[in-house]
Image 1 (spheres, rainbow, N blue to C red):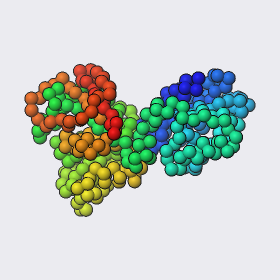
Image 2 (image 1 turned 180 degrees about the horizontal axis):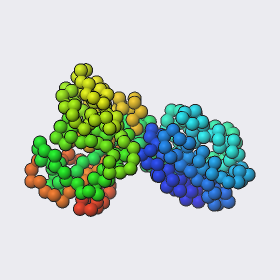
Image 3 (image 1 turned 90 degrees about the vertical axis):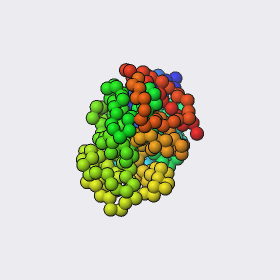
Image 4 (image 1 turned 135 degrees about the vertical axis):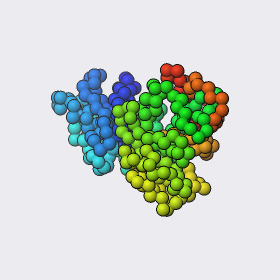
Length: 339
């Protein structure tokens, strides 16, 4: 029965995908006599947490001391954008809590559970451990590995090319393009390299999906990218990663990093800025560098039925696909880094 109600929490939590970062996705339900009488989820960053919405939704407050609260992550116990959820739980009279795993952030890290236990609550934790961690894999990676969660994405032809050399080569179907924009809305930042910026002149915005604009990041070691590129149009926050201290394109913040150890330096800098996740949409060299260094968590490979015969070779991934889907005429292969 506990797993049934925890799964409902996960269903609620995922509704806010792309809107809560750097906070986790959390859902909560209040159960009385085996029946859900109220539910809620953390809808957006800075707003009330799931527990708040669920407890406030209980119409008959006299029932609360006889209810069980289910939540897929340890309740917070510190003041941030909102007051501690543990305080609200205790003030409500609820004394039975069933939760998923502990919150890995240093502000919580088990202290929320400890407060509830000290206050005499009956507490069951770590229910649906793997499912809960999977939902908030970005949050756990950020706090446990001190770097953003990295998602690699590319579209390639049936014969293994990203495109023709020196020219923009659209490969994906319209449905796959919509999906790619949805993916952007779910990540905190999106990254491309110099060559992709020059050849494709991408906007890297969410136009085909309703969602939040990610921060755009472009690599430009020598600071030579034309200022007329879409990346510098001011439509979304943009970070220019460079070694040139004089590089100051319009509507972009320069970030000076050593390109000899670029990837670890970049991920550390993004972690310091609180960037929870990174979608890499770069060219073959950039994608292969992430793969070769093992600095990736997911890879999404869209394979078009189009054959190019020649061009820029797609990156090589030494892993077996964990999932395969049809996206109109395209095939989507999903990979996870198990190391």
